[in-house]
Amino acid sequence: MVSLLLAVIYLSFISLGLPDSLLGSAWPIIYPELQVPISWSGIIFMIISLGTVVSSLQSDRLTKLLGAGKITAISVAMTAIALLGFSFSHSFVLLCLWGIPYGLGAGSVDAALNNYVALHFKSRHMSWLHCMWGVGASVGPYIMSRAILRTGSWNSGYRIIGIFQIVLSAVIFLSLPLWKKNAQAAEQASGEPVATEPLPLRDVIRLKGAKEIMLAFFCYCAVEQTVSLWASSYLVVHRGIPEVTATAFASLFFIGITAGRAVNGFLTFRLSDTVLIHLGQGIIAFGILMLLVPIADITALLGFVVIGVGCAPIYPCIIHSTPVHFGRERSQAMVGVQMASAYVGTSVMPPLCGLLFRFTGIGMLPVYLLILLATQFVMYNRVTRISGQH
Image (cartoon, rainbow, N blue to C red; front, side, top):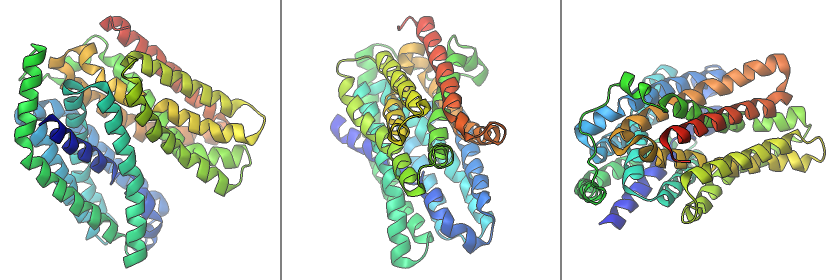
């Protein structure tokens, strides 16, 4: 029973990653077809991000009402409908409108799935599941590129992944009895029932350590998204590295995260979530220092790969340790606000970084990353002291 449910959850995490990189990979074809400025992709991105923040903050209420399985199935179905809407859209306004259900569905499924795994499975599964997200995010652009080559249309790429999401939603609906049985078995084994009443947002934020973990998660996701957005530009503009080489090595940042999470799953057999988070922070710091060393270009090129490896354990281990730090009865509410913090961090901080570069130059990127990393380190240490989980 557990193995079959895990297979469904692994598929769900792949599906989470599949659409995440579609807009970026298809936008060079979309914006001239729709006759809009290239910068308008940011508008769609912000609409989707706002939807994810709203649904993440409501995840505790919805999950307590319907259960993690139903929320996952409904949310995947919602994103599937939105993706199919994208596939039949030929105007910018329609893309913006379909971005609303896409964001709402993505935020709900992310929070519900992450908390369910944190409550009912070992830390290694959290790492491997987020590795599967990386697989999905890597496969999505490939599917889009093949669809464009075969049909000449970006719409068909969205249609293929939308159909996959519909099939997955049906599979999740069929697996709902497994979700319920597994949750009941885990609750009996722990002897600690999960609260059935949702925790109001104001009470969640007042919990000891809540503000600290939200800021820590905010800073981590800001680091990840800032590197994703600015790595190539830093290598080209500041270090004078050829564009093709810079792009190739910057993309290895995601390979570092995905491969690192695969390895991290095995490390969880020996090391705790807190130790792995600190290990990741140390590796990120080393990667940033590699960017600052003014010697061979290969040092800077490999620096972003090292940062990716360091990022690997932090997201899954913070999520998995949430029930330990805040209690099983509060974990869904806390995961929801952490997801919301993550989406705000990824939406706000990279553009802010770009605004900063207008005054300081892009060479300040490593310093910017160090400030975010130091803040994350301090905040997470406060959480472990408050919860007594050093």
